[in-house]
Amino acid sequence: MSPDVDLTVPTPGPRPVRDRLLTLDRRLFESVAARHWPGADPLLPRLSRSANHGVLWFATAAALAATRTPRARRAAARGLASLGLASLTINTLGKRTVRRARPLLDPVPLVRRLKRQPFTTSFPSGHAASAAAFATGVALESPAWGAAVAPVAGAVVLSRVYTGVHFPSDVLAGAALGAGAALAVRGLVPTRAPAVPPARPSAGAPALADGEGLVLVANTGAGSAERAGAVRDALPRAEVVECDPADVPAELEKAAARARVLGVCGGDGTVNTAAAIALRHGLPLAVLPGGTLNHFAHDLGVEDVRGLARAVRRGDAVRVDVGRFASRGAEGVFLNTCSLGVYPELVRERGRWSHRIGGWPAGVLAALRVLRAGRHPLEAQVRGRPLPLWLLFAGNGTYHRVGLAPGRRLDLADGLLDVRVVHGGRRPAARLLAAALAGPLTRSPAHAAVQVGRLRLTGVAPGTLLAYDGEVTEVHGEVVLEKLPGALTVYRPLPRG
Image 1 (cartoon, one colour):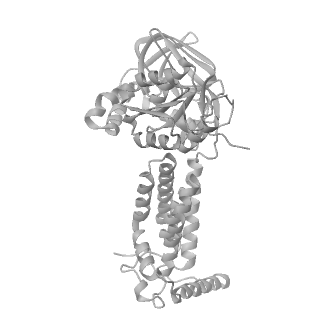
Image 2: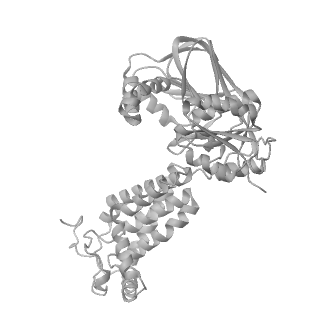
Image 3: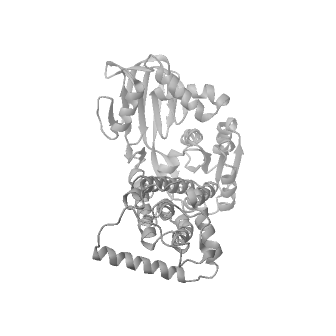
């Protein structure tokens, strides 16, 4: 194998400032080589090797994801994304820009030296960049997990000098580049912390010190058994009912008949069912995320058992809007979104194949089949004018795009439906992509967006599919979408002044 750049190229002529810095750098390297820290000789070389190709950080990310807490999973994903960006920058720009040879190993004790010496240029340190990127990314999403990862990352950075493969300036530059990569990722996909939903309008809800009066139904199909056990520990007098997905509606109805507070643990579809029952019985709702995406719970600010239990004990609750749809023979509510067109078609097509080939392959196949179809899945009359559409999306509250991430809501009680349409025409995939890239623009050749309190569609063809919070139903004729402002009381942890 050969180096990625020619290390035999003569160095430029003398530059006093640069030469002084390089001399200081070498002296610091020699000072580290001369030191002997107890336990470091066997530990740091092994730690340095474990970080080759990011193996250590992938293993750490897997351990974080195994905790099954949303924040830890997001921290792991952000750490890996930051590591990926840092590695890409190092390999495409960093190593090929500064042609610096590795340090001479003469002052480094033999026991510390790596068995396989790197052959690429020395500046900047890729290991230091990866370590800093992963640790910073984790810390930006979860300061607690970041504090746990930081000592390991710091030890990896130190190990690159201690084993003699980098000068101190190499690792400092690499660490700075890695931290910058993590901040760049946050610019594209902001963390949830800066976007805290407003604590209004506040609502009176029972304060259940030990959970007595709370009946929580947990959907075992969403893998929520562990969280159900955590609820029993945090609120020992709460009643927790675990059931299969098919039994969730019946168990929620039974729970509502005897509860002061109706609780639910599951994904958005399960939460939607619980919200409809809570509205009908006039009960406050306690939501614990237990599904895959959990849009409503996360936009509400509830992430785990600890936060929900604190809100239930204190009686911290807010009123949120509920979306409602009605058509001939079909009606329901939605907490997140309601849509007609391509997306409901995709959900139905995916359902036909998921049990045969798995979820992700079925989703890809469904997208290909739906987008290749020669007909518009939705033709409606908007304000008396016929309009072919690829997609009509109505959000319960205004969705804000942040970076390249999907939008999220900052206010669950703004009284508005966020309505967006993708116009009909040729090449649906291109139109849908153009609409996504248009982001917050309210009007473009591909799509239009408007915020209203009520929307009425007429002339909807029989058999048209409508998706709401992951569920699908058929509508036809007239479809009315409207808001029920502040209709639902939900628990959420509120800041204390």
